[in-house]
Image (cartoon, rainbow, N blue to C red):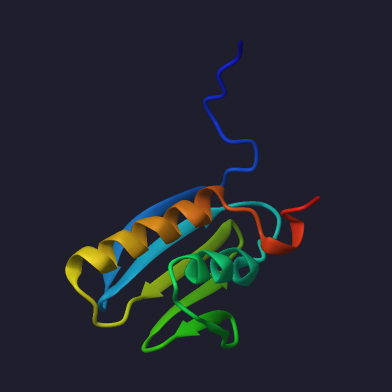
Length: 109
């Protein structure tokens, strides 16, 4: 029997609080991450359709934007005007997708 404490492909994603009504996270990684292929299926899973919009995704009046830096990526999540509970659940789900998700293109490999 073995116990794995860390997920094999997990990324370190740290919440940095909120700024201007958006959740801000910092993802530490060396290689580029296909964020659109990671967040798109996660949003579809909860019934939210999204479309690519430059370096981000747009869903209704909400959006996810990312900016690559020298040590990782800064991710800004702006949610539509939903109830506090729904917004909190979606933000936590997307944070888990950022940490543990595999991009849809490499999920079968």
